[in-house]
Length: 360
Image 1 (cartoon, rainbow, N blue to C red):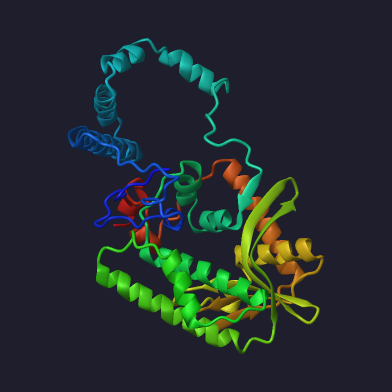
Image 2 (tube, rainbow, N blue to C red):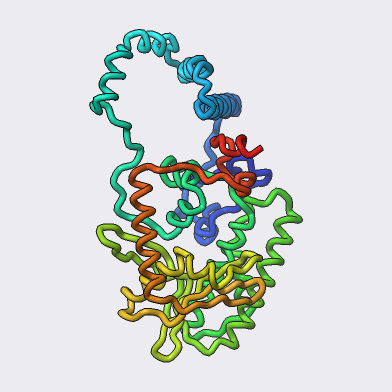
């Protein structure tokens, strides 16, 4: 096993994996622990080379979006040189192309657009939500799998979810929970990589403790029984599979209630909830898992301790099924036309997309 002291552009050393701490890796007689030596000069050179390469790729993509094709070829040649290849080979290959023959083949349908994705049979609820938000983001995220920088508020939400999952399991096992146990779990799951300052991380930790304390107090007033926590599922819709996780399934007598935890500050309205891919997919999942439609599905906003609940209707479920199949068809047809709007200002992929420039 290996780990690095720092990852990417982190300002501080990373925290050791809890699994390494559990085995006391530096003192454990069964473990041979070494710190590999590395040449800092070669590491720096590789890092600079990577940054230059990434810069050229970003510029090429931007040139292509602006139809500024004349600037692309020189940069492609520089990339070839950067990789230790012969840049002149690109020009030589272009001279050998028979453009008239290629145009004729395209017109006659002999050359078709190369598909960037294969037939996909498994999807997740979050994929449909992302596509609805912006098909271009879907392409960058799920097709090209371009990673994004860590976001502290996402890390906070994920960590709180993990803690509540463990607390829920304790409740299901008949064990008591309190804020002290919650804080122990919080420290075990905590990730500080996304925070730029210790002050920001400390404030986020305090925020998480307050959220968990609110949850525990509300849990004591709940009259339902938790039957599943972080329940994974895979359901069928025609020839496709849809997978996901349900934060929590409660039982109230013979009825089931679905809860999806949220740490966001702005609650969704009931009307918005009736159009939500995720919760209505959970509704279908519970029906397949337990043989019975849930009585209610809802969002539990942990900060405000506010619950937004609906009782889905058959026609709403059918409408979501139709929308899912329509979305899958567009994905398979590679329809990734962007949806420009106010969100472009905060888009993780703004550097790759030219739509933001059109809005300014």
